[in-house]
Image (cartoon, rainbow, N blue to C red; front, side, top):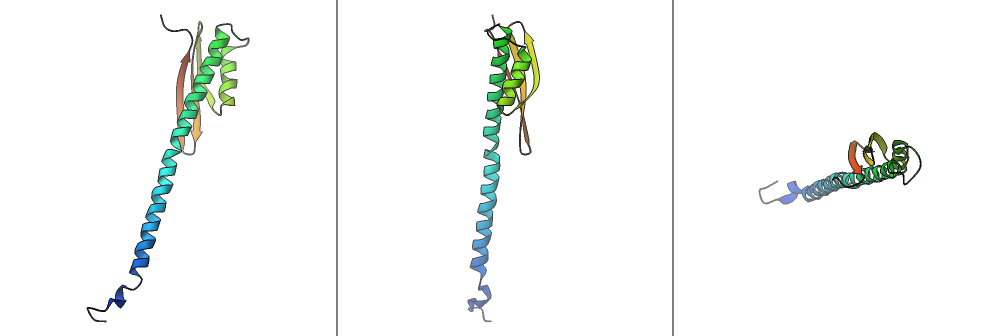
Length: 116
């Protein structure tokens, strides 16, 4: 093989193309994993909001039942679990938990009359 003979580099372009393709696949998989986090967090917040509203409705007498039991039912219906529920007067504060793969989201919410 002489200095001007390119036969020693035969197949190098294929290896380079394969390496770039694998890099693009890895970046895409990573991006999809990271982007999947945002809907899960939004889902947790929506479940917390719905649970707090349900508990506040019961606490204010708009619906029958026990505030935290109603919050737990609504939170479960939204794909989350109720971690905490506190009711004071007509105000309800809840915290829910949503698991998405290796990620765990815990979101709070408050519902009731506006602060005075």
